[in-house]
Amino acid sequence: MPEIVPLPAFQDNYIWTLRDRTSAAVVDPGEARPVKEYLAREGLSLVAILATHHHPDHTGGIAELVAMKKVPVFGPKGEPIPALTHPVGQDDKVEIPELAASFSVLDIPGHTRAHVAYYGLGSLFCGDTLFACGCGRVFEGTPEQMLHSLTKLAALPDETRVYCGHEYTLANIRFARTVDPDNAALAAREERVKRLRDAGRPSLPSTLGEERATNPFLRCSEPVVVESANKYLGARVANPVQVFAAIREWKNKS
Ligand SMILES: [Zn+2]
Image 1 (spheres, rainbow, N blue to C red):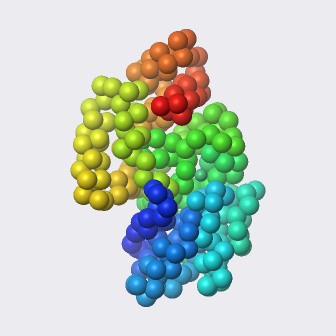
Image 2: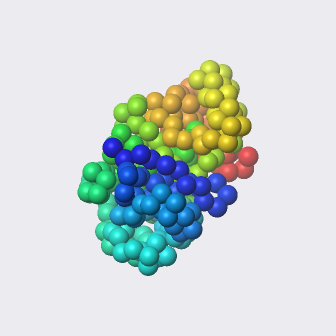
């Protein structure tokens, strides 16, 4: 099984890199330089590029990487991904034979119109849809779509490792504690993540079990989260979509 390595990019992006002794595939290369440096330093050959959505901080390095080596570029059909060779959508398979890796594609619209996730090797690459203890902003879809996408991801097994696009975890946990103040698992998570970050280490991957226990955006039916949404709105929410929309708006303003 390939090793999965984070290459930091920009302020807080991660370019997730799957590698064995000779080959590497990258997920969401927002810039080419960290990838090129890593490949050169490790003596690796690039074999594939996977994009979760079209935002430039996830795709900005693709053109320069394929100019260096012509490799398959997988990305959502229906979004403008540079140099896209393999447009994919729900239930499509992504095969990377050089790494003996295979992924299923999940459509998870909301952050963008056709955002996808890649699920395989017990791992989930979910871009800017599910974050550790948070979720992406709803730019091109509706709160209902976004909640549906998050619920779909939450149905994967507990032990699934979650590789998201940004290191936002500590700020997300701080917000989560205002929504879900008495959650002991969340308090423990904050301590764990602080220690990792103080040591200069990524907070990722997390696991889906951990997200289900602590991520307020996956807990829109929990009474404590519903109550917090009511307080924020000063009115009673009627359903989980309204809870989601309320806490997403609250987070945007916090
Ligand atoms: Zn994005």
